[in-house]
Image 1 (cartoon, one colour):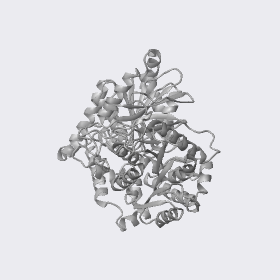
Image 2 (spheres, one colour):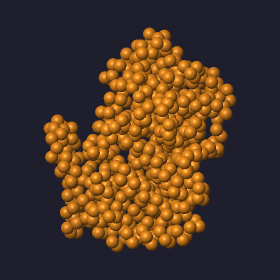
Image 3 (cartoon, one colour):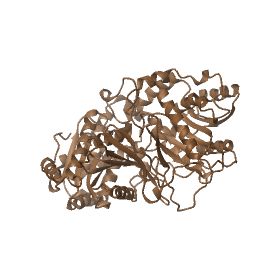
Image 4 (cartoon, helix red, strand yellow):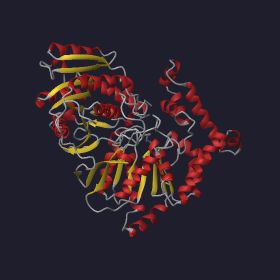
Length: 621
């Protein structure tokens, strides 16, 4: 994973960096980063790309905002209407104007918060087209930074289709599970009216410069980016061209994304040159201790907030508008995805839970998306020994809001974190772990190496070897044979170890891992923590589960209150509607079973129903 180091030399060693200040406006959530010591006369408004690219750049935007603050420049990041943590939009007939209106509202909010009348827009991807469209209406824009700009809407949508297919193939989605209607990527669908407006975009057709100063970060191998810079010059703008060398590694995958630190420094330098030295007028920045106003939707109320020591993490508390009927669900992030979740699944689940009386908290753990790193921590936080402390501080917030009892929910690395967090804190009454890769991580193992080579089940390896495409990739050297062989060997050893104890004695690393996992489960059961394990039928995590509990999970019979659910015809991200319904139902069921203060009768009735059904009705593969 990329370094989380700042773009410039900034805070003193050991200093905790607070998360940005949450604000709400125009039905959306913004994150305002005030200047540490205002030294310029302009503030920066970030205009994000859309979809998968937005998720990949989320952390980069946060790092840029923090470093701009250190140079004396305030900034605001926000979600377009109907995206991220914003309220959903039921009528999208106005097309791209919906997102442009959000941007205009964000500009007004930034001026109010920062006290600056002048703005500098920093955009990427589709955000660049929005920047051009709103700049004239704002009339106070000193400059626009174009990072990998979307120049042609038609070309962009064609590239998006190819990109979407690559992501689907990477997730192992079969053809019948892929979205082929309309514009979509990574489970996110662009409203057709917006897509229709995007098709009409052509920044090369501009007849007037959108701003007096422009910065173009041009992607290597994309001559159109440089042609756009030249076109801006012909329109009278002062243009600076910089190579966007880190673009490809930034948007490849949020889990293994490398932050383009050198490129970011160029952006900060350019912004600083435009902002000037004259001090900004005293702003009306949101007081640090004040909470953002809640966003209220159909049956839910969401409050963006900061949590943890020194307000170091960003999260959103989603509560029922009506009566609370269940325990609080703490929804954990997966890998480096933002807390809104893959394809906004966490947002959709939180709001659905609230409509049924179940509150929830979703938040970014340290060094993920909008939460800064903890001082002194390593760059790589996944599977680290200290990440469960973030879960403890989330429980602190839930308790302070009088929202106990609570339980934790997570998928993939979030499932591992849920399990470890429950071991760390006795206030956790339940765990739902979905497709956890492992339950115990050997800290001597390289996490970065493991993340870059995603292992698969033996069945999946066998299926892939039969494909002509896989054989071609093998011949061309595009498959890491060493790591694939190691994964297969490890699985074979575990399968063999189930035939008898000797292999555990021969390979002590297997025995240590096994003892740690079994000991963890036994500790939670002794505390009467309820556990629900959900797996897709061919997920690699299920392979690891069999290693500890035997085929079909027979080893769970000695562990009360542990339920195993296996979902056929699903994938690691639970893309299908059936899989997500099972996931949501499991959360609602646990919320009711653990209950909330004052509903002991409901808790007793639900417990009797669920406990008798330890195993779900989905057969093992």
